[in-house]
Image (cartoon, rainbow, N blue to C red):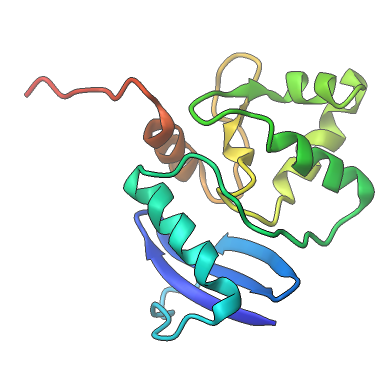
Length: 158
């Protein structure tokens, strides 16, 4: 398993994977980590696609993912991929799309266990009232990502 660290506007990002695919993309919690000088061949595409996303030139990812999780978690993560760039849905709507509105807590828990930060867009799931609820990377990051993806950028007046 190989790992690379890259600097993003939201902090140092860790990407783990090998020739079988990416197993994790996450915000590093370690402040002492520095960007990797060498990028393993199996992770080059992930680094390039994340750089393009943050530059505003990529809206979807074409990466080979190799998730580790239960079948239920994988079904939630797969459904997250159907949320278009710049759009949000509620946890209730996500549960509805998966066929069981009563499973909202389990869906929210699986959403929170998503191992592919940004690539599988769990940040696009919000509360039914429009609130920015629950985000493992911190609500400020969720807000930043949603603002980044918003096609109607807020202009400052001054």
